[in-house]
Length: 259
Ligand SMILES: Nc1ncnc2c1ncn2[C@@H]1O[C@H](COP(=O)(O)OP(=O)(O)OP(=O)(O)O)[C@@H](O)[C@H]1O
Ligand SMILES: [Mg+2]
Image (cartoon, rainbow, N blue to C red; front, top):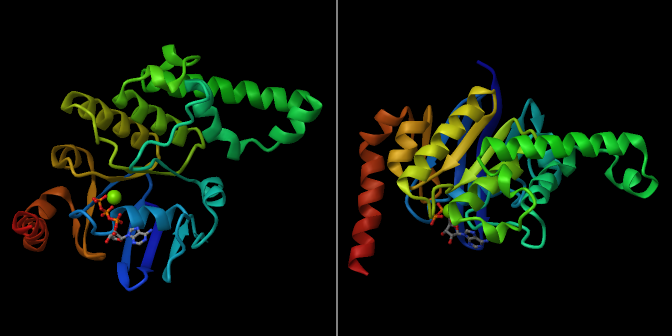
């Protein structure tokens, strides 16, 4: 198995708060990794460091043997990492199809030149990009909405649209931050099947999710965080039975109950 992504000793500090404390793990090609932990444990912060939104104070992120630590988000996308956000980030003024095309632009070398001079090369690229957008939309069952605004979509469909847009950059690592939020269990099951298809085609996936049924049935490997530290790592079953993980979740619940 080949390692696609290597995270080594990543530390992120906000003011006095250590949101990530020397977190390390590796991700292999075509594998699905679940990132779990109680609220505030650092999951989104880790995705933000991996995708270049935050620069870590320490540690490194290596993608395909290239050090991408602290690169700007668009450069990291170009290197092969794409993501969705915990809160939906769609362009309401663009059609569903154009929302997917936006995700592809980092792969289109001649967009700007082509749109000015109307060269045939750019028309070819544009045609290919549109074909790809249509096929991605049909993969997630949204091709009939290609010319509609995102407002025509249900919440669950908008989440799928975000994933289609992330896939438009042909990433080797796809990162999803709570993709099941707002989905019914039926929609979550469909999403799990879709993620399995994506990983079977060779894309590695990192997924943050509180829906344990979803995580347990989907992922190959789990990294569990608590207070910014990796407290456990292993297959879903070993994590479910891990005492530190159970204590982390129970501890947070107890604290919530006391408030
Ligand atoms: N931009 C920021 N500035 C200051 N503190 C931040 C920032 N982003 C996150 N934090 C803090 O870092 C810690 C980790 O937050 P993070 O959002 O990564 O948690 P999470 O595991 O994704 O939680 P949730 O499950 O609620 O989404 C929290 O204490 C949070 O308040
Ligand atoms: Mg989060």
